[in-house]
Amino acid sequence: MTRLTQGDIFAETHALLAYEQLFQWQTGSTMLAVAQRAMEVERLPAACKIAVIPVTSGEGVIGGFSQALVRIFRHCNFEAYITEKTDLGGVLEAQTQNADMIIMADDDCYLMFNVGCKGYAENGYCTGRVFAQALYEGMGQPQAPKSVLVLGAGPVGESAAQRLLELGQAPVIYDIDSEKARLTAARVHCPWVEGDMAYHGYHGVVDATTAGGFIGLEDLDQGVVVSAPGVPLGVRPEVADAIPVIHNTLELGTLAMLCQCVHMQEVEHG
Image (cartoon, rainbow, N blue to C red; front, side):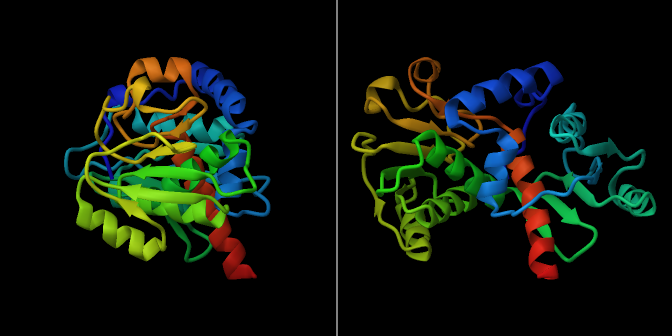
């Protein structure tokens, strides 16, 4: 998990509303609807109480992080609040207040738990799937396979490639660590490339790297769509002005985590 900084978090209420409009223009759907399809959730609960627990271990609480999570959930009409206590005390508080879901993050993990079942959601897996889903819908939901370059062979890139295959698309994995790319591609059962990276010839790009500003407009074909869960953003500013770049640091992945927790309950209860 990439540790966000306070500057990475833009989930203020007005920014969320503006971003939702941009996202709908790019994909044709709301963030929550895309997250629901990515995690294959049949229906969302009419009411859901979500406890956001600040975690002080490691480098400590990221300023604005818990508040941003509350805004994201409330934006989608779910009840959410920050526990008064932190860490395990916050878990106990959430349990005694009958929270349906618990969400928390430390330096290494960002997790959400469904209190009513054994289900949990991990951010890397959920983020990869939901940004792949957003790319698919941003490309117009092509029925014939479209070639998609997945940059980054970590958990997010692997999850994105797997979801693209499920959607009938043709992912190709690249990583600066060629052996990592090869092993990930073998697990997913898709091609991989090595050597000097060429971005031409792809209909879509998933940027699941942690490098910033390395893709220029001249690197991409006309009509390509970029879906970028990576932090910092891999494309340069002029790219986002010219082609669709689906990117946010927290919102889409967090909603996918909620949907995954709901999905796990659906599976457990049949």
